[in-house]
Structures are given as C-alpha cells and as structure tokens.
Image 1: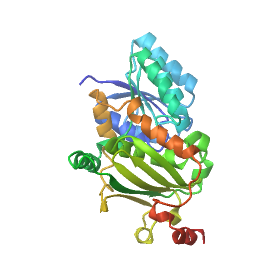
Image 2: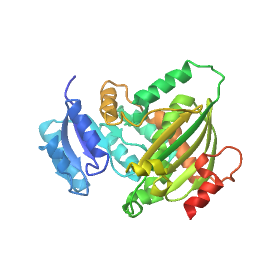
Image 3: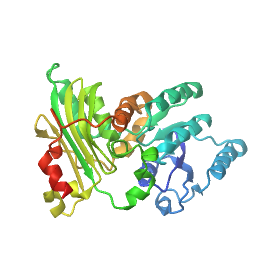
Length: 323
C-alpha cells in the first residue's frame, strides 16, 4: 500500500499515542503535529522528525507551504483534540482537501453531523470516526450471536462502566459539559455506538441519574432492553475490584451472561487505521445514532425510579454511597 502523509491535532492528549502508534504501525508518515501543550516527547519513539507546533496558525501555514513549495499533500488529519473542537477541526481538514480521522465523540450535537455530511460531499473526502468497539473480538462475536439467534427475541442488557478519575478531571475541559458533553458523552458514547451497531435503532431513552460524576438510565433498542450505569467516582467501584488495586470496572451482561471484554483494547486503533486505509472506515452516519443518544441523555428530564433501572440505582445502595 502506498505511503500516506498524516498530520495530527491534539498530539499532547491522552488518546493521541494510540493514533501515533497506528500511523507508524500502518507504515505511514507523520508530517506535522499540533498541541497547545509542548509535553509531546512521545513522538520521539515514533516520529522524531515530525514538525511540531503549539499555534494553529503556524501549523496551518506549514501545511500550506508543504503543498505549494514541495507539492506534498496531506492524505489524512487525525483529530485528538477536546470534544467541542472536533467539528471545527473536521471542517478544517475537509477544506484542506484531506480525509479526517476523528476520535469519539465525533461531535457533541447530532445536527453537526448533518452539516458535516454536506461539506464532506462537497470535498469528495471522507470523515472517519473511531468506533473501536465494533472491532473488538468479543463485540463481533456478540453481534454474530444475536444475528444468528431468534429474530423476535428482545435481549436483556446490563451495562456498567466505572473508570475513576482524580480531582484534575473537573478542572479540565472534560469537566465542562459545554466542552465535553458530560459524562455520558465523554466516557459512554462508544458503548452506545456498540449497542446501536448490535441491537438496532433506539426506541426509548430514560435518564435516572445525571450529574458531574455519574449517569444512569434505561434504553430500548429494536432488539434489546438496556439498563446502564456510568461513573468516574471511585466510590462506585465494587469493593472486590478496589481490593485488587484497580480503578476501572467494565461489565456487560447479556441475558444474565457476562461478556468478557476486559482485554483486547490495545490493538483496536491499529485495526481502525488498517480498515480506514482499506476504505472500510466508519463514517459520519455510522456515528449519528450514538450522538443522538448522548444528546438526549444530556437534555432529558430525570425520570422516577420505577420499572427497569440499573441495579446500582437501588435506593439502599444509593443511600450507602451518599453516606
């Protein structure tokens, strides 16, 4: 496969090393990188000759000079910036005549996707969304099992994702709902995408809890009823997990059966880039339902605890947490 030229925005961020590694893994070149922070020594392990900028204007000028003076055209811009900047940076990439690869969530609001679809068509380039759980072996196996099972069966799902964060979180852009989209968007959107991919269109969306650290609710899809709970609060993690010194807990139970997916995450960005370079990446419309779900969660009224709700929302457990 022909070597491709990449640039990356947000190279100093948490997820950027996986993108850098994936660019290297697929034998491509990182020409330029941008971040307002200059703590980007990670690049030395992969692309030490990459031109690095802390100001967008200088980065943009460099890309222009490469094209006009050396006839070097970017093929892809990888976007790892804060959530609220994704829309603007995807637009920049398309204006430059370049394909985009964007981290989740691709945008914060669903109407932004509609605008990007129009710009994408005008540019004749592709916006690729990183929807890595679709490439996880356990999720692929689950999808195949559902598709090969009874067509009229409604599956019962419990989704729990607890990934504790320190005090820094609330003082960063991630703690600002206008910039991150809040808890459900920031840490949950890829799970909602996975559920959409496997179980079809969403038909009901109820929210039982929503604050700066935790969110919980109930979703109905064409083929599933889902009780979900997300949190960055360390106190929500079950004691047996804490005893082992762990700060993260993931669980997906389908019809009472635990789906093992605690491993296999480290290679998913490599797989994502391989698929994108083969023209098999996930596009804007693939990501749309998950963005609609998180937007609805963010704006929904809080429903009373009756009917189906996540086990973590049981009153005695909530009282214990509060104390």
